[in-house]
Every structure is written in C-alpha cells, then in structure tokens.
Image 1 (tube, one colour):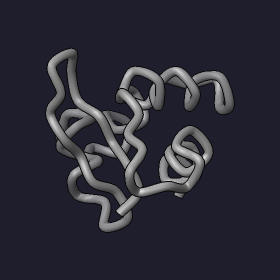
Image 2: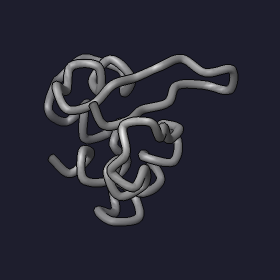
Image 3: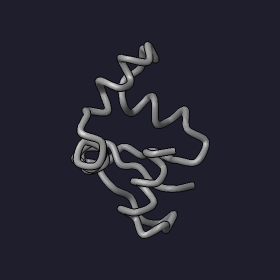
Image 4: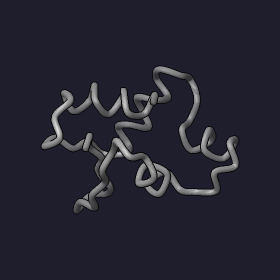
Length: 73
C-alpha cells in the first residue's frame, strides 16, 4: 500500500504517467527511513524490486531505455 501511494503521488494518479523505480525507492527511503530492497529481503519475499512490483495488482511496469518504470494501472 505504501508503494502504491508513493507511485500515485509521483505520477499524479495518472495511468499515462510513469516514474523510474529509482525515484520510487528514493521516496520510500525518504518517507520511511529504510531501503525498499531491504524490506523485501526482511519479509523473505525472495524477489528483486521490479519482480515485486509486477506482483502488485495496482501497478504496471515497463522497461524503458534507462531502466524500469512503474505506473498506476
């Protein structure tokens, strides 16, 4: 839920707008004081950050020239 809220905030809640995963990770760290990748490891989700986001029903990922981007579905 925290990640969906961050993506909504960063994209203006528009499905046409994408944001780079690095920006989502930075904003998560700013708000919660922890790295998202560490949280994923702590919960034993055994996934990389992009794979974790792909499993979220509210989010969609796309591969861009400079890395992964995420948006609200």
